[in-house]
Length: 164
Image 1: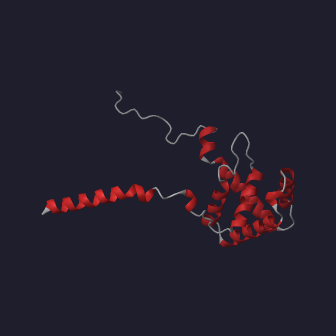
Image 2: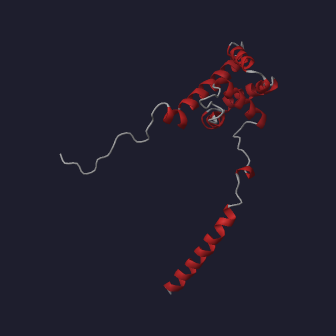
Image 3: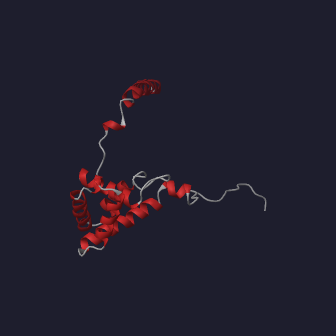
């Protein structure tokens, strides 16, 4: 009786593993839609441009290169209240209305400085939150931790059999 069960399971396994390569090879990253947690595509692009202006790339990867905009969006979606998310979304609407991504670097920096000095508390809070999350995400990214801060996942060594 057990022989039949074993042969049935073995046959099913062989069939499954023979079909797996043809099934999995059709998966390509282009087929998957990019996931936005709560921001629209325009707002997500504005956040990406804003993050790139805060920590620009060069010889060292910038915040946009390390996808800190996705970190910020995930943090806002998971860790902040709906009022804060709505405030940030309204701010990002304002950013996209001003065509922030089409401006040059000095204009972007000037806009960020004016937003920080804005009389509206919601604008000041939103830009300061985005800046602090950008710095947090960048400084705790894998690239920065391993390349510049000499981070080791499990520091120290384990010596098993050591005579005392």
